[in-house]
Image 1 (spheres, helix red, strand yellow):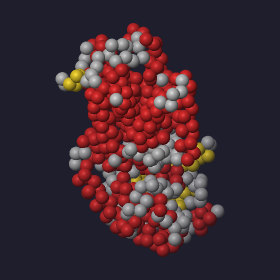
Image 2 (image 1 turned 180 degrees about the vertical axis):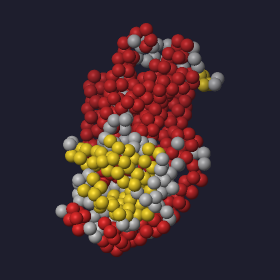
Image 3 (image 1 turned 90 degrees about the horizontal axis):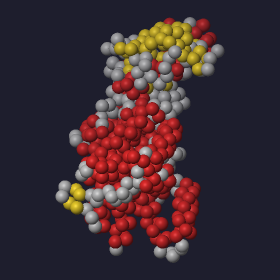
Image 4 (image 1 turned 90 degrees about the vertical axis):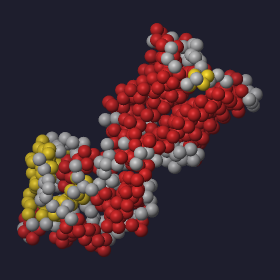
Amino acid sequence: MEYALHILVFVGIYIILAASLDLLAGHTGLLSIAHAAFYGLGAYTSALLTVKAGAPFLLGVLGGMFVAALLSLLVSLPSLRLIDDYFVIATFAFQMILFSIFNNWNELTGGPTGIPGIPEPSVIGWEVTSHLEFVVLAGVFAILAFLVVWRLTTGPFGRALHAIREDEVLAKSIGKNALRFKITVFAISSALAASAGSLYAHYITYIDPTSFTVMESILVISMVIIGGAGSLWGPLLGAFVLVTLPETLRFIGLPSAVAANLRQIIYGSLLVVMMMVRPQGLVGRYALGR
Amino acid sequence: METLCCESLSKSFDGVQALEKVGVCFPTSGIAAVIGPNGAGKTTLINVLTGFLRPEAGRCLFGNREITRLAPHRIARLGIARTFQDLRLIQQVSVLDNVMLARPNQRGERLLPALLRFGVAEEETRNREEAMRTLRFVGLEEKASDPAGELSYGQQKLLTLACCLATEARVLLLDEPVAGVHPEMVEQILGLLRRLRDEGKLIVFIEHDIAAVRQVADVVIVMDNGQVIAQGPPSEVLERPEIMEAYVG
């Protein structure tokens, strides 16, 4: 039971990551490879604020979101003025740089040894300690993130985002400030990823750089693609499938060295099969990178 | 009412002079046709006027305001809308959504109102009514809920015009609004242009169909090799043999 709840906490965390990346990649047409970097920024900022400065959990979360949104401008302001292809490269560079910082700034981040002893969350008097309580907390965060994504991808805002994704020239010709939309969406997507990072840090109570590598970004991209980019439920489904699938593999009884490799093979082949058979994802309507 | 003017505009692509010291002042309202052979610089002129291309020299003015270096969306918000030769529409979404997208100053496109949904529903209702009114004007109201990509070519041209109108722009720059369209629909589109002129709009359109130009244009501007070689009322300009020769040649 505890184990199932543990998995559910991760489903919640990855729903936030996948839904926020889909806001950017699926709905706005901007692929970011730096999602793990912003996830890590949230985790580190929140951990440092609570461990070193004694800040409460929620302040840590908001601090992480703020730092992520702010640093997203470092990527978006210079690169989005150019064509979108440069944005992908810029996010890749940002991912590499952030990982190096997490891994090498020993005085601040603890380098490869990471930050231990991160306090468990306390939300206005509610001490979150049991697995079940964490599921509730992760659920609340996931619902809030989902609401933000839903409101920004429907109605006039979503209509404008989709227009920018489909035909930016047209969008500009009818008065839409495409650059402003893209910068805003990237900042929000990054801030939401950071909130997932805080959740992770305070759940595991220990972080190190290996959780925030480019592979993690690719895992989240896979969730979006497999679930269905640009759809409301796709990223949720993708997150659920890719979090629970490796866990079910555990029960087949393979030695862990084999299972780990098998997992990579399954991700890879799943992506290839999806690209060929259903490029728009399980429930999506829009094929990424078309 | 502001006049749209440009002064000694120059623009070249890889050494080819697409615009060479082009100076034009369009009338404040009415229908102006820009004609000329392929490669004369007609589309380049529209692209420069709407901010999609930066000229190497010269400037564009809208009233007293210089618009030469403004971003395209800013020029659109000043009330200068355009269509494209290759029809640009959001194919997958409905005809109505395409028009609603083009409505100006939408509160729901700003971050906080979008998140909190303050007053967005009322605004959407208003925009839907306005969009339907525009669709009725161009005769597409029955297609409102069809995906834009399923319209016929001529209907898609009407829809791009509807999107331009939905921005509430007073100046419309139309790149070949009747090219490749069924003759009956040509009449319909020309009729719409006349009605828009009567409402006080300025319509600048690029066209190869001389008969259409003769029918509706108040002013004809002839371009060749990146230069304006003649302008004036069609009855005068279109009768000059050297013009017709340049045009046909």
